[in-house]
Structures are given as structure tokens and as C-alpha cells.
Length: 61
Image 1 (tube, rainbow, N blue to C red):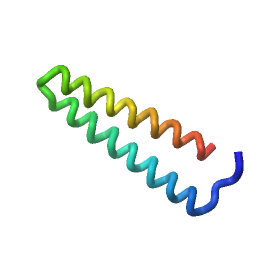
Image 2: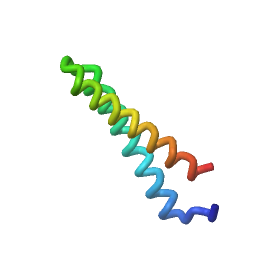
Image 3: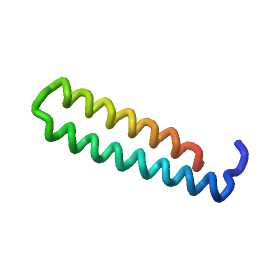
Image 4: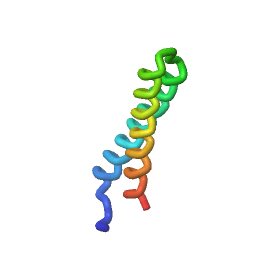
């Protein structure tokens, strides 16, 4: 894999931060839900955000 430029690295950090924020918020929403279908939707979306964050982190290795 080629080395990342400073701009690419900065963009990657922003994307990782955004995915982490989404994960945290979606987990909070899921924990506050009463409706099981909506809770499941938020839980899946949170897991998707976490998976995306982990994939983005691989570019830093």
C-alpha cells in the first residue's frame, strides 16, 4: 500500500472520528428504545459504524 499524504491522513482521521461518534450515538439510542424492532435497527447501525471504523483503521497500519 502506498504512503498516505497529510491530507489523506487528516481525512481518514475525520472519517474514523465520525464513525466512532455515530457508533456511540446509535448505541445510546438503542439503549433507550422500548420498541424491539427500532432497538434492533439502531443496534445493527451501530455495529455497521463500528465495522466501518475498524476497516478505516486498517489504513493506518
